[in-house]
Picture 1 (cartoon, one colour):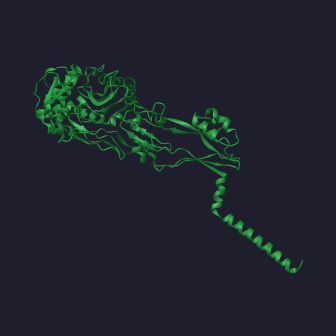
Picture 2 (cartoon, rainbow, N blue to C red):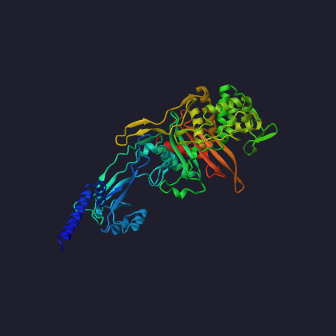
Picture 3 (cartoon, rainbow, N blue to C red):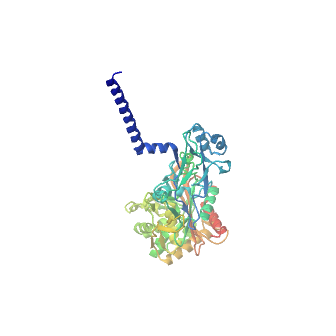
Length: 532
């Protein structure tokens, strides 16, 4: 071989060697490659993001009452066989789907399986087997974000940044833990906070128990009379917040919070006219009721067309005489009656959060009430008038609280869940005097007589006294040829020095197994039994 060829060969070898050295140097200094290599030897698994819980007025948990378990499944270590009998249905499906996985993963199991040599971690379970106040609290989507109720309305507070705890596993090429290492749990602070509600867990549970046992659909509200704080908000039928899909197409609309919807109210509206009459000093009307009342050629009947004979204000409330209240309304005039309804909160929504409000209901415009027929209907709670159970509760609570209307409250404050310290107030109390304490006293006596001597006799509790008003509202909707009606009882307990205002609604029914007044009495008995 000539010297020239030898030089070329050596030169080529040196050049190739230099290229290899440069490549090695570049690989060693390239952080992206280093990170990729590190990732191939480390498996990072995430836990569900921590979410702030709901608490009742006494600091008792309403969510997060239980826990669930996540087990670490490692490839090639018999995890499938070991974990499958203890996995939840979703966990079993995941194990089957990932049976040949080459990387570790977390699987949901029904118990702590650490005694079997598996790595197992407890995480909070959002809802219990018997979840409370589901219609009010709402539910989460598959990613753990609130999509309904307070879960959605307070999403930013409850979720914080959404940061998640992580499980870091050092693994080999086969995805197994490297010898001598253990999974490392890395905690993250999302800044999520708890939220304290005005609900009482014991009163909420009692109200839900009564609702489930006595009504097909409807709601029960219990307010603290002195503060208008809502101690119970039960809506039935309920739903499972961990299996919302099962209720999406249900004909009885279990996902609807009935306490926040607007309904025809019927005679439960009559205390509004009684309040206006007492304030105006127009309480001397006596009406000889033939079972109906004619207004400009239109006939308005009392329930069943039953004649009530001569009735004054007290007897008209006791017997729920429609004709009397039409005549009383005519004496008062549309302006005065409508103004009292406005001051008592009808026609206005209640805002709980930026994205969560009750329905506003429907208060007829003043122009509408210039029609004699429309005003006659309005005087006994029919026609265009629609109201929510929470509006009816606020109206009745004004009577119980001495004439002061207070905005019903559901929220107290945010909480530091570690220390239990109150952080930020979430509700600003709104209150105003609507009528005099003397008027309120007279109304309490009148409504007490509805229970002792009138249509509300079934509302009498086993112990003590109660006061209130019945209401049967026509809806104009029919099922199998029968009209669907809303059946109400709204009142307070005890009658003389009220502690609680209670509203019972059974909506869209053709018949009842128990009257709303009887259900009211059961709620009173439950409060008494619980020592509330």
